[in-house]
Image 1 (cartoon, rainbow, N blue to C red):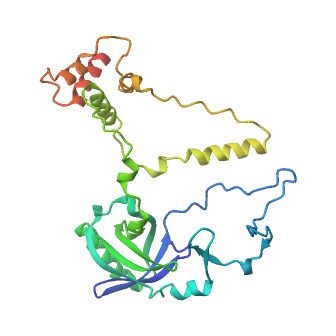
Image 2 (image 1 turned 60 degrees about the horizontal axis):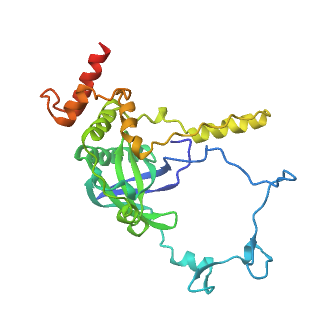
Image 3 (image 1 turned 90 degrees about the vertical axis):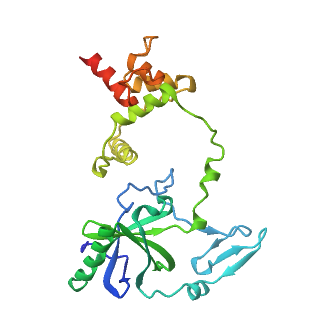
Length: 296
């Protein structure tokens, strides 16, 4: 991390043990393709200006202030110096307040991840003690500090030779899940549909490999830019087939490799649904046996 500049430097403290650490961005969007706004007629770049909603005149930067709306069109002006006065001063101390099991925080509260590393050789031993203690106990530390002019709650977890410090969203920032899911109807899926769905999952079991997950949107943008620069047109993308409600079972059968042309279901699936065969102890095993017999 020495080639990058730390976003924050301070001290990590657990009890009476402390060490100097640096906080580095773990995930960045700086490498994404970005666009500028242009004048279609001239090809020149556009610049953004703030316009008074009543006078329609341009307001220069030194005349712009922040304001909080108290009613219909009524605002309280807040001067930048007033904002600075209420921002808590950073003591540059990331002090653990509590220790919890690593999986206890719902990831909906996760905000941004940062790498936490010792800033010099003198801090390495104390840092390693904290890291290894967390790793050996399967614990994460909850800490609070001032980051980027705001008090932030941070979850600190061991990660390889270092630590991951993830800023957490405040409770008021996370919308209740029941509000998002309230329109979802209660549907109980069972029988062949559930068995086939479980079988599909069983056959697709794998591991998360970040290096193999490509950003298709970014790749498509790069191809588009290259094609435009070379005067070529890209072919239109194919439409995505969406399964209709009455085709769900057929779609599941196709995904599981079950022949839809036959009106008679394979023995493996019948055994699963009716639970008639002793060999069908689990849905995935029964379907696998059927598929194996067909292959042989």
